[in-house]
Each structure stands twice: as C-alpha cells, then as structure tokens.
Amino acid sequence: MADYDLAIIGGGLNGVSIARDAAGRGLRVILLEQGDLGAGASSASPRLIHGDLAGLERRHFLRVRSALAERDIWLRIAPHLVRPMRFAIPAHSDERPAWRLRSWLLLYDRLASRSGLPASATVDVTHHPVGNALKRPFGTAFEYSDCVVDDSRLVVLTAVDAAARGAVIRTGARCTRAERGKEWRLATKDRGFRQVITARAVANATGAWTPSVAETVLRVPPPKVAAVQMDQIVVRRLFDSDNIYVFQNSDGRLIFASPYERDFTLIGTVSHAFKGDPAIVAMAAGDVAYLCDAANRYFRERIETVDVVRTLSGANMVLKPASRRDGAVTLEHGRGKAPLLTIVGGDVTTSRLRAERAVSKLTPFYPMSARWTAKAPLPGGDFAWDRFDNEIDEVRDRWRFLGEDQARRLVAAYGSNAKAVLGDAKERGDLGPAFGPELTGAEVRYLMQKEWARFPDDILWRRSKLDLTMQPADREALAAFMAAAV
Ligand SMILES: Cc1cc2nc3c(=O)[nH]c(=O)nc-3n(C[C@H](O)[C@H](O)[C@H](O)COP(=O)(O)OP(=O)(O)OC[C@H]3O[C@@H](n4cnc5c(N)ncnc54)[C@H](O)[C@@H]3O)c2cc1C
Image 1 (tube, helix red, strand yellow):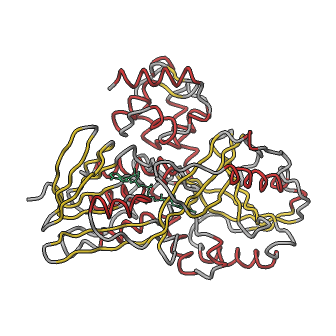
Image 2: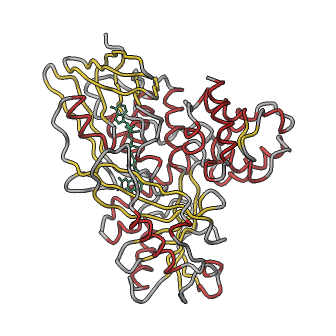
Image 3: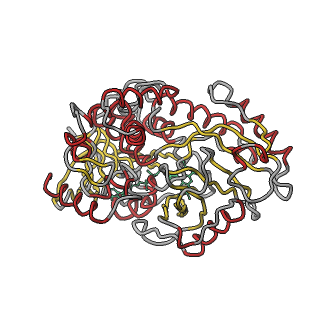
C-alpha cells in the first residue's frame, strides 16, 4: 500500500488549501514545501478578500457573486485574519464617470446583499475624513465594503488545520524526482536528507514553478501557462483614516493604498510578464517609481523612491487565455498512470473553493467524506467576526501587562489561540526574552513548535510583519535564540 493517498508539492496557498480539504475528507496527505510555507507568491498578494469590483466592468457578474459568497465564508471561518474595511474611490471627471461607479456599487451591494457589511455610500470629500489625506480637490468619493486578509498567516494557519486533521507538513523538503506507475514514487531532499515516499496521487501546486516541476520532476507535458509578476511597495503611513483608497490612475489602472501593519501604507499593484527564476523576483526601479508617482498624484504627503521601506513581489502562473481570478485545476490519469492534479494561479479569495473543486476531482479514486471547509473555522477563528474587539478586551483582561496594540496584534495573528501563546504569564518577564517591543521568547517557541518556523524571516516576515520595525541587534538576538532552541 502507498504511504499516502495524496502527495502535494508546494506549500503556497493552493497547496495548503488542498492539504486541509483532503485531510478533512479522510485522505492520508503529505505536503512537501521546498522552503517555508507561503514563501512564494502567497506572501506577496494584494491581501484582498473581495468580490472584485473591476470584475463588474468586465461583466463577470457570476464570478463576482461567487467571490462575494467566498468573502462571507472567510469572514466566518477566519475572523481573526480577515478584516472588513471601507474602500474609498474618489470620483474624478477625467476617469470613469461618477454615475458608472455609482451603478457598479449598487450592483455590488445587491450581489453581496447577505453579507451584513455596510452598503456603499456617496461621501462629500470636502467634509469627510476620507478627504483629509487627499491632494486633489475631489468633490465626491464612493465608499463600499470589502475585506483584507493577512495572506501569509492564512497559508500557515491553513497548514496548521491540515496537520490537526492528520496531514503531514514538511517544510524545507524539495521534491526532486517522481516516478509514475500505478502509484507515484517521489524522491525528496528533506533538510539535506534524501527520502523516497509513495503516494496514490500527486498534486502539483508549485505556483510559478509549475511548468518546470511538470517537465523536470514529474516529466509530464507542462500546462499552457504564462508567468506574471506582481509588485507592491510599503511606505510609512500616508493617512490616518482606516480606509483603503482605490484610485483610477490616468492610464486606466486601478491603484490601491491600504493601511498596513499600523504604521505603514501598502501601495499596489503593477503586474507584467515574468521571466526567470521564481525564487528571485525583484521589483524593477521603474515600477517602484510608477507607484510612488501614482500615490503622489492623489495624496498630500509626498513620497520618493527612497521612502520605500520594502517591496513585495511575487510571480505566479496565469492560464493562456487568462482567467486570473479562479485559476485552473486539471486532473490527468490513465491506465497504469496514477492521478496527477495540477492547480494553477487564482486569487486568495477563491482559494478555498478552488481546493474544494480540486479534491472533489479525486472522488472517483477514493471514498471520501463530503465537502466541509466552508463551515469549519481555521485555528483560533472560533468567534464571530464582529466580536474581534471583544476578543482583544478578553485578552487584555486576562494578561493585563499587554498594551492595546500588542493584544490586537496577537488576536489578529492567533485569534482565540493567543491564549496558547501567552500561557500562564503574569507579567511580561514570564514570556521570556524580548526581541524588540513586541516579540517574546514564548511566541518564538510557539511558532517553532506549532507553526514550522525555522529561521528569523519565517517569524518576522511570514508569521508576523515585525521585520518592518525590528532593529538589527534584536534580529541577531532572535537568530541566536532560534538556533539554540532547535
Ligand atoms: C500577477 C498576479 C496577480 C495576482 N493578483 C492577485 C489578486 O489581485 N488578489 C489575490 O488575492 N491574489 C492574487 N494573486 C494570487 C496570489 O498571489 C497567489 O497566486 C496565490 O496565493 C496562490 O499561490 P500558489 O500556492 O499557487 O503559489 P506559491 O505561493 O508561489 O506557492 C508555490 C510553492 O511551491 C513551492 N515549490 C516549488 N517547487 C517545489 C518543489 N520541487 N518541491 C517542493 N516545493 C516546491 C515553492 O517554494 C512555493 O512556496 C496574484 C498572483 C499573480 C502572479
């Protein structure tokens, strides 16, 4: 008998979502990730959980409605990671006319009618906080509701849930070769050690690596896909309001600026064709300047390229011809040829549904239980999304030494599992050494033991964004602490 029912190659959002779905349906699952979970495109997304207003312009009404339904599911199952936000589109006469924006938003409200989020509204920018940060004399803006998500934590907590349901998650484990017969024989290099495992089916969920893994590891014809790079920049906070601004740039692109980790603003996106090694995706200087110029066109506070504290770039595959939103799932098998699932591209909002469809394709091969992921909360997500602030209050009541910001960060990252991080601590010192004002030894240990963190970046960038404010000396102390804790 094969070691596993399903071996998944790739620990981005697509891979971990398949692992969670399949493990919960009773399959014996292993996931192999060559680096850290979410280290590819999945930690460089625009972080939106949305119906995609622009989809209405392309008349993708059914897709928008389905994505809005997914948005509601995310709010229910991940209320710590997904936050409702008010998006603001300042109307400008040179661009899409106000009446058109208004009619899109009315339709958007209708398609999202059961969400419980506030409906869209027209605001007078000259007398509304939305206008405070804006440079140009906009008269009107439109506000509407959508959500943002902590994308890399979504990946990690999805993997945590998959593991809790029996999946084996191996990070630092690269699949180097696969022999296909009635079952798969996979050669892996797992933290330097060579191993062989067998599986009844394989899923190729390797994002921008999909064609090369198909050709060189699985030795099957690569899917017809094109590589696309997507870039964003992080600058110091440009505005006080909690809105996400969506600007209609003069070249027709929609540019957004979003509050990011309390003290910063995330501005994006530019995307273009990508060539090269997906492990090294760097933003071109011209694209950094483009996003700074776009922001300067709208915000009072000016930014230059030297103000960019971090760039976020990812590469992934889109189908030819492209349907970027939903991605694509194919299943290939034959006599004496064990099944191969290939899952390509798609956005964060639709990832749960995509995984559900992918795993459902395997039903002819295995007995498995019914679809389940729409109703089961992710780890720590067992509270209603509108009780997020109550969760923070409860944490502050019990661990009185925590400041408001610290408690908020912990609840946003761990939800109700913040309790497991904080344990019985009575005072700050009980949480072990401090690495900067926020991170403690207790949290580092938790992340190493429960969430596969191995290196400082795993913690500082993918399981938190503390890298944005961490001093070099604290980083060095963290590296030494982690090395000693292994
Ligand atoms: C241009 C572009 C625009 C996008 N726009 C949006 C958007 O507007 N909204 C949105 O929500 N999302 C968007 N996304 C999607 C999002 O960023 C990701 O595509 C999504 O998170 C799914 O990623 P993934 O799991 O397929 O790939 P990845 O996150 O890249 O994961 C693939 C993983 O496979 C691993 N791997 C590769 N080879 C091997 C091997 N041999 N063995 C083991 N592991 C291996 C890699 O290390 C990597 O971690 C966009 C993506 C692109 C490219």
